[in-house]
Amino acid sequence: MRKMRITVVNMIWFWGLTAGLALGLEFATTTLYFGLLAVGATGGLAVSALGAPVAVQVLVTAGITLFGIIAIRPFAIKRFARVPIGARTGVDALVGSEALTLGAVTLHQGQVKLKGEVWSARLDPDLTSEPIEPNSKVSISRIDGATALVFPLD
Image 1 (cartoon, rainbow, N blue to C red):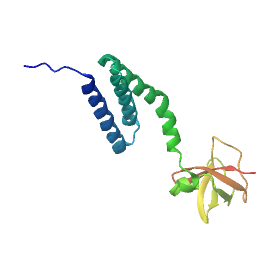
Image 2 (spheres, helix red, strand yellow):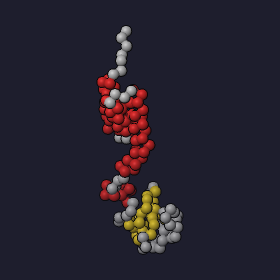
Image 3 (tube, one colour):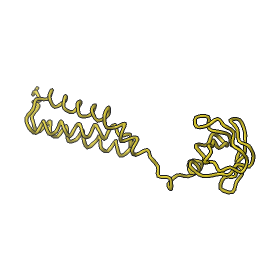
Image 4 (cartoon, helix red, strand yellow):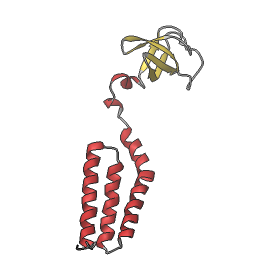
């Protein structure tokens, strides 16, 4: 039997195919893990082309990939998770809207007129605990089920 020898050309093909497959999986999953693996494999390809030993190629690939997952991915996820206010839909589109209190709003109960509709409301305990008087302008901080959590604008 003939023993297969690892050559530079073989490793360039290996890292190129690994990067291509990882990139294809990234397009299918959009998790940013496979994309960073593709970047790491490209680093392995580069050091392979320079003639580095296989162990160095693997270390470079692993190092670049892990650096990306630990240091870059969290920032990228936060950046791409932001949805512009104009692009929000459903109850997410109500956050930041102004409303008018129809009665006193407390930590436990109240009602507001929001975009022409009457909503049950209560104070957002993270922002205020002082009851709000009727006919006051409020802002919606978040929606909890069918209840708007509000805070005063004045």
